[in-house]
Image (tube, rainbow, N blue to C red; front, side, top):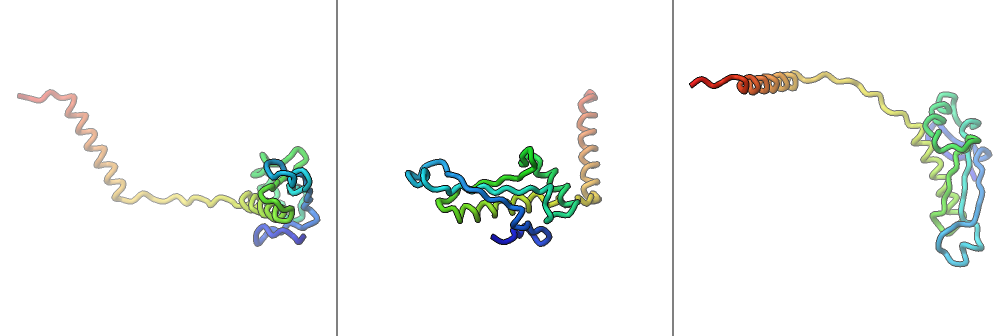
Length: 141
């Protein structure tokens, strides 16, 4: 297993990723009872050398609900019938989760209202005001 490439800045060393296998549940006949194809990948972002201090702080706040009490991020895959493909799938899920959590939202740049939109708003207010004013008066006969 090689290092897990998350994005151009973050590469998780393989010695920080712990992979374990277990029997997978669900349908599959005897194969489910004999073969350990379920893959569980654990990674501890708080102790990782792959993250800068700013990235670590941001990532821990974004992934707080997914971390265990020990601070591990656990990703499980039981999608396929083979151990190797489930391992690849779990590592891909881990990379995606970390990549999405590291993405910072764009700053919103406030824009000015156009002159036409301001004029439309004022024109609408004048019309509404005129309508209400006409209600209160008695038409003269």
